[in-house]
Image 1: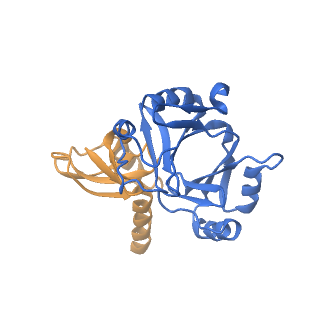
Image 2 (image 1 turned 60 degrees about the vertical axis):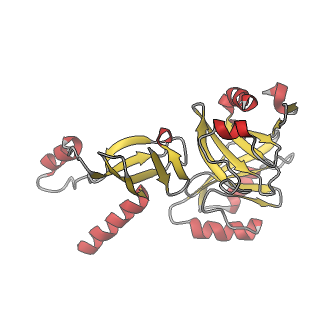
Image 3 (image 1 turned 30 degrees about the vertical axis):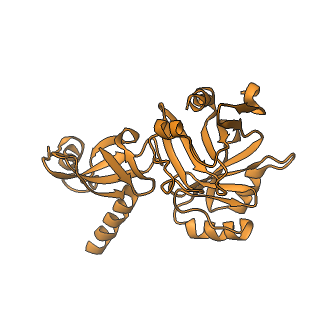
Amino acid sequence: MRITCPYCGERGNDEFSYLGDASVVRPDPASPNASEAFYDFAYERRNVAGPMQELWYHAAGCHAWLVVTRDTRTHEIFEVKSAQDVALERQKSAGAAQ
Amino acid sequence: MSDIANGLVAEKDLAISEQADLAVTHVTARRGAKAALDDASRTAFGTTLPSGPRVVNAGGLMIVWAGPDQWLFIEQAKGGVDSSNALGKTFQGLASVVDVSDSRTIFRVATSRAPEKLVRRMGIDFDEGAFNPGDVAITHVSHLGAMVWRLPDGSGYDFACARTYSRDFLDWLRKA
């Protein structure tokens, strides 16, 4: 499997480390159901068979965190974005929703 | 590394030399300061900072992309001049500036075209047209982290690694 880093270009997956599901978001500790939300955030994971957003770290390259959309059945990669950009987009959309 | 520090290691087809007496400074842009950093660099060195994996030669000062919003500034050490300190003043408030001269070793392979064996031993595409003069790659070789860039004038390749691993890296380079 090869991953196209948005900074470095296409590289072998030996240069990357895998963290896991990129869709989970840290809950607000001030929310009324914070305890349950943190349990889900820390432990509950979906076992996706299909396209999934994952966090990968370009450990042997530019040291950037990436959000990779990958089909877990075929390893086909649909999109790779900088995790920083994804986080900023989420902040922006969260701000717009408030 | 003293035995190879100033010597040219002549291999069969390659001239490998350690670039001695370099001042190497790592610069990381503060959040949101890239545009201001570019302005400061243009004023001080006549060029903006590479925003992707490229190296520019600003009158003997090599500015090498070292990751998103990070660069290595490399120049020949001048007696009595603290290059990192000077860069810290140039980029005051815009970047974190660290002198890494003692933690990096840079080897130069003087060849206009990467030899086949070297190409085959690295995980990146070294082919002509894919890795052009001025291109930079951060990668690993035999589990050793390394940066490689092709000199902007096309006269050779520089390899930078952590000084701790420089002996092993040189072994790898010689075998390549």
